[in-house]
Length: 304
View 1 (cartoon, one colour):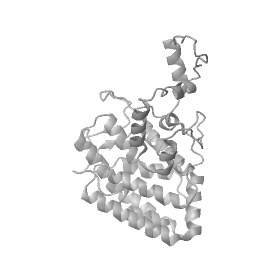
View 2 (cartoon, one colour):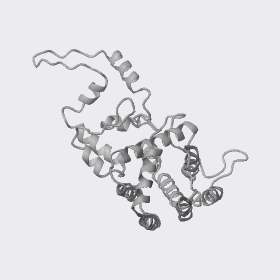
View 3 (cartoon, rainbow, N blue to C red):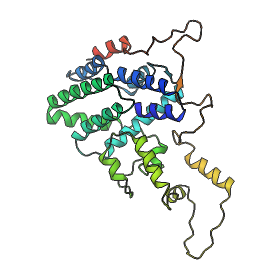
View 4 (cartoon, rainbow, N blue to C red):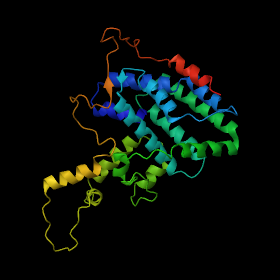
């Protein structure tokens, strides 16, 4: 979630001080010790039930909007699909239950690099220790069950993500590709859990300097390539190319970020002032809502 939020804040050129506040506030709420404890303690009960997708969406919406940031229904849906599909891919390329803990720790380490400060560093260290104690206390059988349950829970999600398609990790039918014939593939697999937006930006910059960087796009668009070495290249009809591009990628979630920050209505992240802007609207406390909604904590702490 924080990877996506940080990427969109930067794409929309949000002021750095507001971006820092959003990331810090969301981190503080997401890793609130009471919240983490309530989730872990609830999972230890013999009658514990899996959280439904709707439960998780409610929880994440509450967390994502704890600061200056506001998400409309469409933006929240995109955030949810990006989170679930990237996480699903991370587990897709793993083979052992201990990889789940490795991915989680990489998530935390990457979060720690987003505008780091002493308070966030201590919070992340505390979360790591809490999760490690919980994991070690589970034993091999319970660890395997947690790992398999995570993978099974994600099977119903099959959204196409442009980032994964561009990297060659996802096919146009939404399925994942197990063996990708690219040098960078194993780096992504071995570091699953790292900030995929940072890694893909670096990889894209490198690919742009290579002569065959457009071959994959041409293949996805079914553009035939001249096979004869002496054949003259034929011009591409620009309108036809655009129509085919839109037909191919029009229903793919979350296109590449635009450089424009002045557009309205379709922004992924919308920031609101901390003071009330309409009659009856309650403003956020200064510094953001650093304490998770108490009703949410009570809900998850009382779950069997």
